Length: 201
Image 1 (cartoon, rainbow, N blue to C red):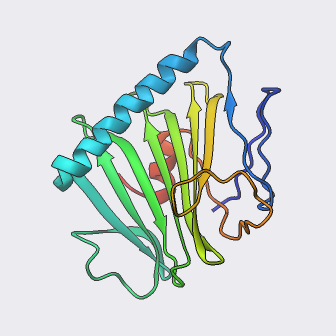
Image 2 (image 1 turned 30 degrees about the horizontal axis):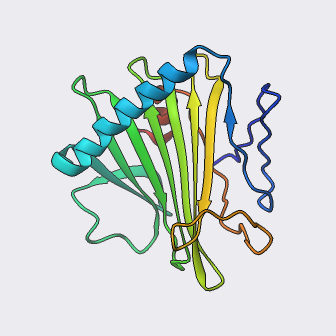
């Protein structure tokens, strides 16, 4: 995967790819698209959650191994291959169009779990990207969550960021946090880009 680093023209936003620095949140209140984009993303995410809860047969499961970059569809994750690189969830809408993807890179050590999620709108453009990371930091577990909201022109309109401890309390002092598990990842601007990169029809 390519390392992702985004620089927005918004003066209130700076996201550094330096793993030692915290991420920042961004919001462009002057852009009239922002509320509608966020609302549409919430609606689509609710549909995705509904599929997971009530129609999990609609979730396509895939695995990727070290010996094969192509994704292999599986019925379940009960017997994962030893050379696993990542597993994936895909959800389609009633038109058989992919609206949601989730990538779960495999952690052999079990010391971290990263999840990269894409939500695509009806036109196939990236609407919402989420990065979630849970990792061990000394004796405690730390969780990060970043959400990126985009318009049809792929402009970042809003970004949220939170980091919490294992008691679900927000962390404000980063001096003792080691961000060792911010690995390179990709944000795909369109559904077609994602499908092409992962060779899925």
